[in-house]
Length: 267
Image (cartoon, rainbow, N blue to C red; front, side):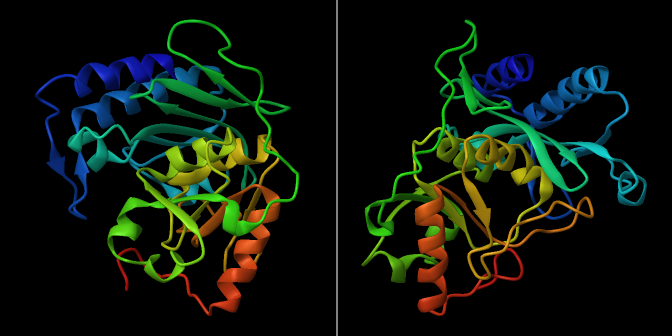
C-alpha cells in the first residue's frame, strides 16, 4: 500500500496525470494505471491462488466466480477528486472470501495515512514509521442519530439527495466511498450512507475495515446485510458505522419513505 501510495502521490504532485476517458465517460489517469500495476504484482506474490478483480483490469467474471479468494481493488477511488486535487480520493484493497470481505486496507494518500484491518480492530499507519496509533474500535455506547456525524457522497449531496434530511441530521459531504468507509472505521464519523449502487471495488476494502472495527453494514431500506457475490455485480446503497445510529438511520429511512436509486445518476 505504501508503494502504491508513493507512486500516486508523485503523479498527484505533477502537472501531467495523463487523463483519458473510458467507454462510460469515466476518467482514468496515469496514477490509476500505475497503482493498479503495483498492487497486482505485489498482492499476486502474497497470495497467488487468489483471483484479481480491479476497476482497471480486464475482467472474466465467470472465471472469478469459481475462486474462493479474490483480491478486489480500486487503485484510485475518486479519480475526479484526484484530478481536482481536493485530496478526497483513496486506494482501496479488499480480500473477499466466498462473498465476504475478510481483510481490507484503504490508503488516503493526501493525508497521508493507511487504515488496515486486523483480527481485532483497525490499525492506522503513516507513510514512514511503523504503527501510528492503537487499534481503533467503534464506540458501542448508545447515541442518538440526530447527534451523529454522517458522511455522504459529495456527488449525491450535489444532486440534492439529502436536502430533505438536513432539518434533522448532521450530514457532511465527502469524496470517495472507500475513503468514507475508512474514516468511519476509525471514528472520524459515526456512519456513512449512500443511496446509489456501488461496485465491489468501491467498497470491499472499506467493508472489511468496518467489520474489523465492530461496526454494522446494512442496506438502509431493508436493514439486511450486503454480500459481495457473485463477483462484479452492482451492490445496493449502504449504511455503515456505529451499530446504534446505523439501525436508527434504517428506521428513519423507512419512516420517511425514502428510496434507494436503482442506477447511478437516477433522480
